[in-house]
Length: 210
Figure 1 (cartoon, rainbow, N blue to C red):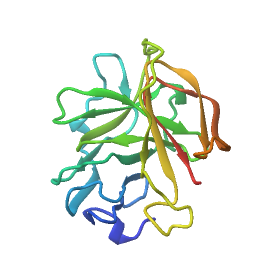
Figure 2: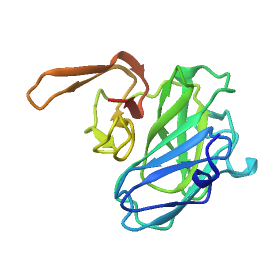
Figure 3: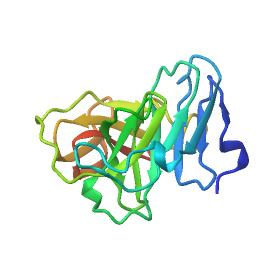
């Protein structure tokens, strides 16, 4: 379990960033250094069951309780959100994260499931309610790929700066196999982080420990 200092509410320092966990450790937020324009108090807690709809107009059904993320400062850089789904029995390929600013309209985000840790991860840029749903239909879209972002932009596997790993995030127009390779500035292949890994439409994140 995480230490009490890392469970809500948590003061995230502007210059250092930091981690925020639920008390059980099943859900985690990471803010990189200078993510906020100033020090910010962050809360991350489970929502009441009636504040997250059991089903959406698209036919997606909620598979677990939702979470409320809140902070008052301006967020200048994306945070990493990962949610444990160990008790979820729905097919992994059907799972996606949705968000709502007020509990009314819900927007599909996506997310990438790590089969080993059973955690669904993506980059987040705003507070609000977040919940995992199981989808009954395939998301149709173009074969587009967004620009790639990194959280944090600089990291240290030894833990001397920022975090010990980096989240490599991007969006897909439709489900597709994804390969992620890391190269040096001279063009030498350093590591193949993912090889033809099946990922869904929407936001995705691959994490690398350096």
